[in-house]
Amino acid sequence: MGNIRYAVPPDTDFMMEYRLLYATHSKYEKDWNSYPHAHYFAELFFVADGEGTFCVEEETFPIRKNDLIVVNPNIVHTEYSSREHPLEYIVLGVERLCFRLEDHRQYLVFHNRESGGDNGDISFYFRTIQEEMSKEQEKYAQVCQYLLGALIIRLMRRTREKAELLPTERVSRECSRARRFIDFNYQDEITLESLAAIAGLNKYYFAHAFTKYYGQSPMSYLNQKRITTSQELLVSTDMTVAAIASQCGFSSQSYFSQSFKKSCGQTPAEYRKVHHPETGSINLPVGTEFWGLRE
Picture (cartoon, rainbow, N blue to C red):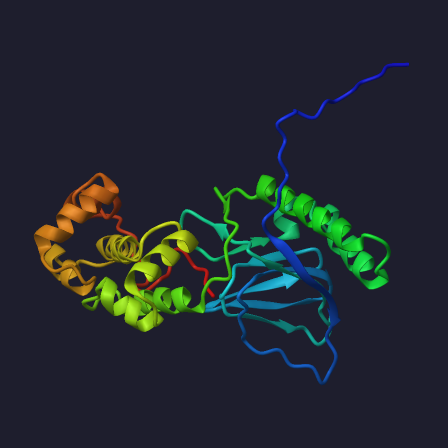
């Protein structure tokens, strides 16, 4: 009989800074309505049964059994159930947890059908945490906390995105308010002082908190939003570079070209030539949000 032993490295450190706040188990009934809402903490939403629709700010997509949605803190979301197949789901509220994605999206979706039906193993963590919390046996809180840690690691392994786990403090409707202002007003003149005023914070504290939460400074986020929008316009329209610079909020065409090349490695004209040739151009709807997720 063979014997295989797997050793744990001595430097393994599993000190978790995020904390499980609650677990809820819900099933839709006729008189139950859900409304858009947000929390200062993250939520992990696992569909135990049924079908419906999930909304994250302006994004809407279908959900069904064994699908999982992770929503970052301060992101507006809700769900709607199918009448024929009512939603039943388990939700975990997790404090000081945030997934940072390269495209600035604020949620992750694990569709069971797209992962080869492998989300069933994820249900173990949700159901076991729910059971532990409902029975409240000895040291159940510690059991739930470590199950949560294992679940998060499994999710980080499975996502195709380069997701970074950010243990965060209780941030910050204030930072989220400023980010949303940027998203919808990037074409206007915006300063650090004006964003701090919108957040209602000292500008130095605001800049520190925003950078810690989103992984980049407020002005870098604003510049990236403008660059992303300009890329879209270069591909989907025949607007001049000067017009695009103006529409995206850049103070001049030369500053736009300088910022664009620094970010993309090409001038706007070179980028357009590659991605929007004179023949066979692809027209995408202006205003499409590439990064898609929100509060």
